[in-house]
Structures are given as C-alpha cells and as structure tokens.
Length: 211
Image 1 (cartoon, rainbow, N blue to C red):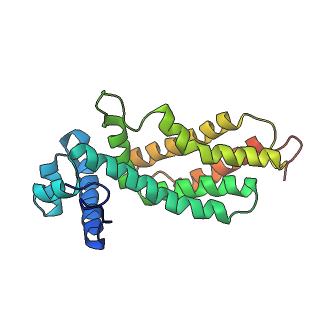
Image 2 (spheres, rainbow, N blue to C red):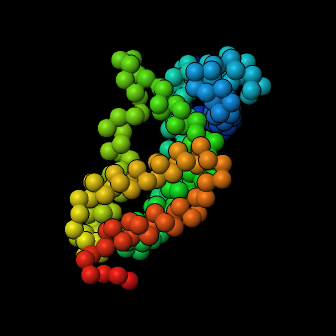
Image 3 (cartoon, one colour):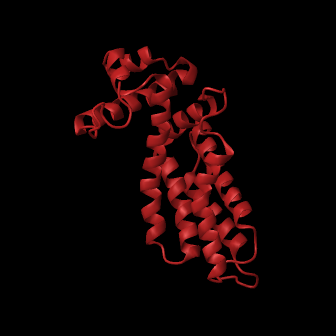
C-alpha cells in the first residue's frame, strides 16, 4: 500500500498520481450521493470502475483516502487563491483578492466543497477527535489573512482592530457562503462576493476614510 512516496522511496509516477486523483474524484461523487457514512471503499471502487484492491494499493484504507481528499482540495484552493493575492498590490487589494478568490473557488467547486465539509465533520483520529475541525487547523488556515491585516495596519492602510478577530469574521463569512452554496441551488455567489468585499473593505478602513 502507498501513501505519499512509493514504497521504495521514489516519487509517485504520473500514472499513479492520475489514478489517485481518479479515486478521490469518485469518492467525491459517492459522498455526494450517499454521504460520508455510506461511502464505502467498495462503492467508491465500483463508481471508479476498479477493484477495491486498487484503492488499497494507493491508500491505506478509507481514513487515508478521506484525508487525502481534504488535503487535495485545500491544496487546489491554495493554488487558486495564492496567485490572486500575490498579484494584488497593497494590503487592501490583497484582502479583496483573498475574499473574491476564495468565494470564486467555492462557486466553481461546489460538489468537492460539499464532500469536503461532510468529511471534515465526520473524520476522526485514533482518539475519536475530529481530524481537521480543530483550533490548530483553523489557525493554519487563517494565519495568512491575519498577516495581511497586520501588514495593512503597519502600512497605514487599515484602521485599528484586532487582526485575529477580523480574520475569523472574514473566514466565517466565506465558510458560511460555502454552506449556502451547498444548500441553495440558486445561491448568487457573485452578488454575495461583492457584498462581502464591500462589507469588510468598510470594516477595515481607517477612520475618516471613505473612498
């Protein structure tokens, strides 16, 4: 069985990586259809048109597969969001790019986001604690946003507020949109994105700034 590099220490081949992505994509489809509890390896294998043994070759059981599903989506999200933020000049524009790119990614990947949410809520470690839904995991996600806030304050672009509290508020607005996009088929993400950008643009401004 393999997870990460090959059993002999070599990096996985392109074909192996493609197979893993195929299995993860099938897991997303099965979770979307029957939920986390019903997403057995046998069902995922059937959807992918492969044997259960092929899954076992690439993943060390269901927990490993679900873990890699979450990690893959986080990585894909970072690959989409980071360039948009880095291309923006100044903390204010970086904040707006962060919000817009996060919400745009959610809108373009609703099924994956729904599956990820189901996994995060259900996947447990050996001690029965949530594997991903922890304070440490949240801190890792929001730290780049906190850094933007602090840099904006140092540069005089933002007003006085607690960067951590503001970052949590922004993440709550983004994560809340993910929930609505999953539940509401006609949810207008573009309108919501424009609203949230305006909301936090005003909330972070220096007092007396209205442009």
